[in-house]
Length: 151
Image 1 (cartoon, one colour):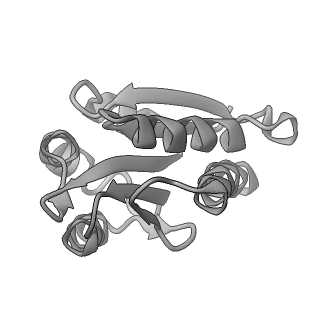
Image 2: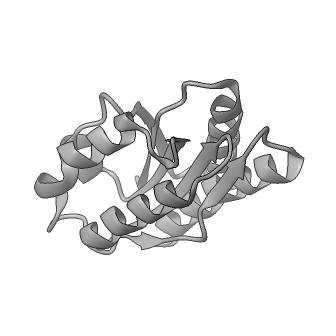
């Protein structure tokens, strides 16, 4: 069974609503063959990453950069997963109060180093997520799950 790993740092109501929509999108009945596994960024392990076929990553942009929790995740899994996960699909969603530019750049640099391939452009939200933002999160989860289902 294909497995989608959702790694998230969800400290705020805004991020929680985005996370919920990603999970809803990935868990659609048409995608029931995909197992969706969720792990907080501070506990996700290299084994979680190696056992998954694709990933969705979620983080706040703190002072314009990835949260320490998501950075810790990447630091933990980078070398153990570097050669074993090449080409795997991933999606990214970020929330910041004003600027997410540095967080997008950091995530892009790290995932490029891992040689993961994006399933679509990141969902980047500043301020309170509106209906369109949450719909884009739903789509991100659905597209990531469908991508690994299709192989």
